[in-house]
Length: 317
Image (cartoon, rainbow, N blue to C red; front, side):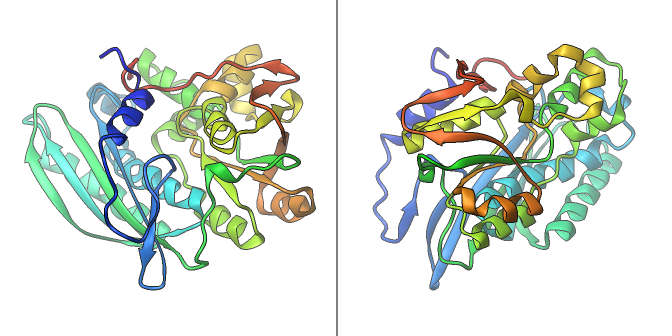
């Protein structure tokens, strides 16, 4: 396919017409948003596909592979809801099961799913199972925002600061170890296989009054571009403030910053916010890494950063 993932989404979305009243946000943000019994409903879905997001032989590299896979499926969808400032309610799972899969592996997968459901406090209420030549999982998630508002990519304003949770680039380093077939740092591998959705941080950020957010799924710079383009602003980053773990520094050396900027699948939250909210948000765990101004593009130490990140139609695992 000649089109990239996001070009394809744009093309397909133009053929759709939202005819039902009550839709607040359609295609183009982390979740859809709609009116739901006097509050706002949030709807999203995410898939994990063998050969695209993971490889079968990784089960020989980590003893908890299917458990982690179940947790990851849940966490990546919860991360979308977290970036809107909402909370998850109910979910459905579709499984495509190949002949090679064992019953014990499916049980382990669902132990991981259940662990994440308990952690994020919502329910799985149904789904579908089909036979498939490749193993795949898909989770659809319904959430809500009780504040009757959400955080959006399009709400960054000149004068805002840019904040992010956690550390960046760890997931990419973990993925590279799995692709090489040798686990050198289990922390980095687990950051890829078992990411944490920043649900509490998202809810609290909305309560504090943050208007703009997204999560780091396709790469820090790429996801910053989704904010910059949606909000029609310029974003400037300070390289000395980009949060990088000691594990990544040891693994990647001088290349750690590039992992942090372009790695992807960290599922940390990016927000923009006015300076008067800085102390409250830093106490919540957000680190201030940059500024928002008039203009366009994303820059690091005043140098233009190319818009690049993960694209399903330009390469999987």
